[in-house]
Length: 357
Ligand code: NAD
Ligand code: IPM
Ligand code: MN
Image (cartoon, rainbow, N blue to C red; front, side, top):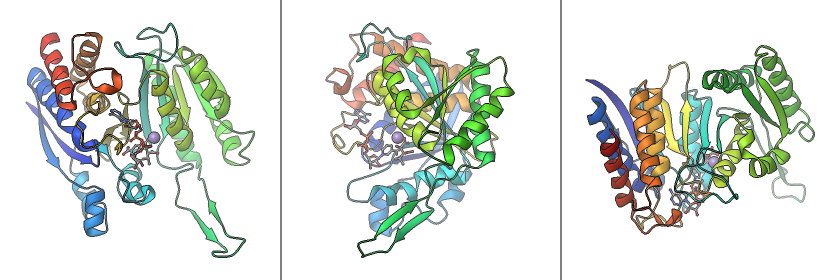
């Protein structure tokens, strides 16, 4: 039996609540598919920061590097400024492990009310490929003329040719692999004078290498509108770090809820472990009540299985999610119209897994 070493970082808020159901589903699918998991759980979080002044220990990255993959809940709590907590753990993991692809599916699942009229499960089904290590997410810049009337800040965005080309290439390769040769680019080259004209130039150069792939480019403002007006148009959407971040809440919003959306932070070369997490955050507004929807975390675990080469197990988990959601008799959490707890909904998904095996 193959056994994978998984680093588990529940993090903060509902991260701690949605992680146990995801591990239970992983164990269940492991039994069915004869896969083993050896978990190391690390409680690094905002509580660690408040107690020690750092989000994770000095050897934290070393410890994580000894795993096949990382499963993360969420990071962030109101008593710690977000830029401190996120730049203290989540963002350094993405950057130091060169997880330059942030892959985020947008899919209308059965049993979830779509805010758009007349859409059925499967009608909305595309992939966001978000650049994950550079772009607008940067510590370069700073404050000037502090304390005077001229005070301000500069926040620098960085787009390298290497970084831009590799994410765009990943999007083209993904479209080809999916048999859906259509890539849409998110730009804003009318307003951002340096970065986005460069992005467009690199996108066009890459497109020339994939002549069988249809391409289009949309300024981010109209792209946001098109996500709402005609989400079925899209197959693969590639965007910078910030544009990809915004689009990957908007997409799931259009399919009814962000709570089910997963996210894979991938180092495609396999030099470092990749990290899997829900798109959503630590949701302090509902934390501690055991009502968070665990689907985003469970689907993230399915993406992890896929990445580890356990595609059949990944497919089974996704089918279990869909089977549970499609059955109105199955208990679900309040965000999608039920009254069940996180644990009850998670157990229902694990039960569906055994039914469909
Ligand atoms: P959020 O995703 O935590 O919450 C947004 C809204 O969606 C809230 O009303 C919340 O209750 C709801 N929601 C989110 N997940 C849900 C779930 N599984 N089930 C039911 N409802 C759910 O976003 P936010 O409020 O902008 O951020 C809260 C904190 O999380 C901040 O500290 C932020 O920086 C952090 N954050 C972390 C991550 C991450 O770790 N990857 C991602 C996003 C936000
Ligand atoms: C996400 C989150 C993070 C991001 C935050 C918490 C830094 O919103 O994973 O989408 O912007 O990447
Ligand atoms: Mn986000």
